[in-house]
Image 1 (cartoon, helix red, strand yellow):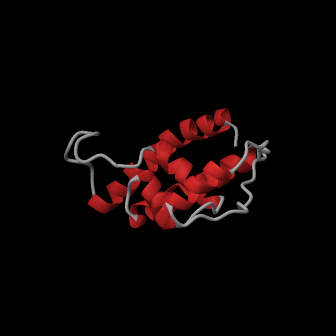
Image 2 (cartoon, rainbow, N blue to C red):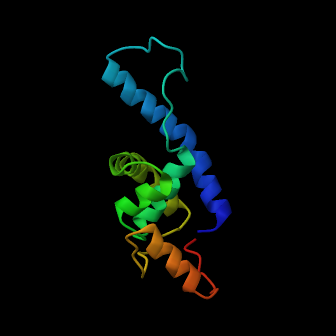
Image 3 (tube, helix red, strand yellow):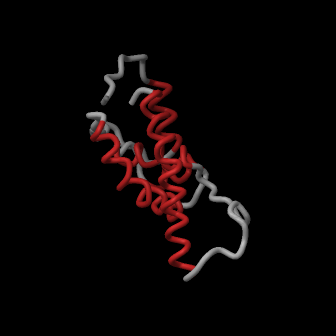
Length: 129
């Protein structure tokens, strides 16, 4: 996926995810917020992290454990982020005619991924968009 496409996807998702998260929290609280917006603990994975993790997950590049390690979160946090973002990402990619084909390689540990990158020769990567 070209970097400009990923950047555009992240920009579009940032506002939508914030609104969805606020709606979910409103339902969970059963009313309006007591604290000001932005107060309290911050989500560890940023919107960019969430979108990138979802794209990598859809690509089936690695296990959830590997992706969680790469993003510095636990597996349940990564799974929640992917499940939150995936329904919004796929229609946006479809609008642009982008598909995310499964990877031919699947990695289980960061060491496996690093070793593969170190041993691979530079090749032309075909964009999906």
